[in-house]
Image (cartoon, rainbow, N blue to C red; front, top):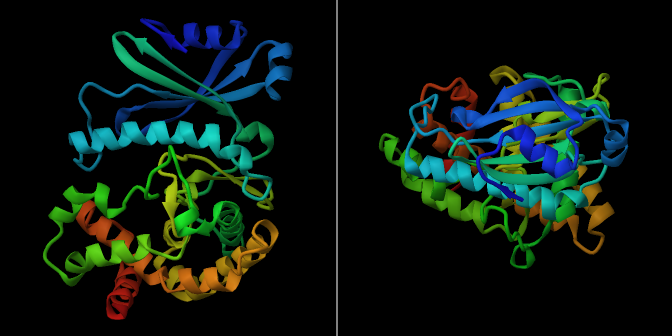
Length: 340
């Protein structure tokens, strides 16, 4: 659907064929001022029945004329990456999300609208509201049991889409999943001081991307993108802007680093990695019975430290004083470099 010089209400009215909805609240702003995510509610029972729930989410993308990046990365490269990320997110919801099940739950895609708003190209991504589906809790840190819940989600998501790398087709998604991979972060790489990690960055990237088995990875699997039910017995995930091809351990290390303290990582990293591979083995048995799960585990386990070092490389260039850059992270990165 294309509309010129329209308001959001105009666009939604045309999309739903009815004006019977209202904006309830803004949930959050998009990164670098690219829009907002808001919760809406149908004021018509028939619309609620049609779409399966009274509430829905609108991701409103309207790129600013002048980008203000929180850390100063406001280049044309960054801008184009963000625009591409929203295109990828829509493609994921259109082509892939319906393959996810209750073990790797994601929002239901309702539709997409592109329009011109006050002379500016804008986009709406409409999806179901996970809050109204029972996933009302967000967290910034997790207990070990809660981390395992997210690891189980990742394992099922990865197992669903896993194939030998040559057979994986990810049309419409990122050729390489994750927002920090080297080919899209050359500016940050240039900012790194000279080091062994900087020198070996290309080799690490190549090893991660040439794994024998690939899947679709979330690409931004931080704790903030998981939604829990009240008793933390179930979880769903959101934000698929950087979904694409890769090894599942990129999601694994990013999740662990996002929700545990340095001490918790140091004490529990090996256990959580093993827990993830336990879940992955079970999920592969469920979805990919013809694949040898042991070969997948063997292929990916050797990449765990490299995946961590790859993210450390990004942080050094992007935000060298970031709190995630600690002694534990340095030690894991050093193990990765020693393994080369």
